[in-house]
Image 1 (tube, rainbow, N blue to C red):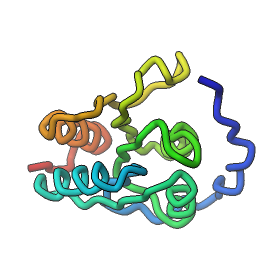
Image 2: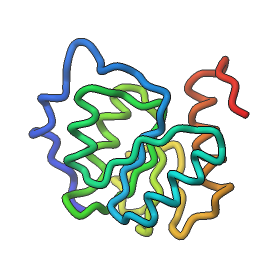
Image 3: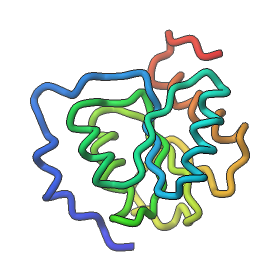
Length: 142
């Protein structure tokens, strides 16, 4: 898989980080899968911020920063790796939920979890809860 060119993303590097929110950013270009992920997260008491494209997610990240992110690796308008790089630079945990293979990621790229599609609801929730808990050990997740 070719490396993502992040040179066009430098405008997102700002001295003051965007406002941190408690939502889980979900970037998924298949509407039914996005709705399914949204329902699973809401059933677990979490709030999802759904974005259907890489470009839409990058615009959202200009003004907000999520508690964690669930990203599809292969999006219609590019890969999710560029989004993941920005999030990791901000200390935001990244979970890939993809029909692809973890070997599609660069060898040195680390993510909180890889959840394969079709996913099991409990596996996705466990990955998100673990990512959020690892980020803030004082945060209570029910």
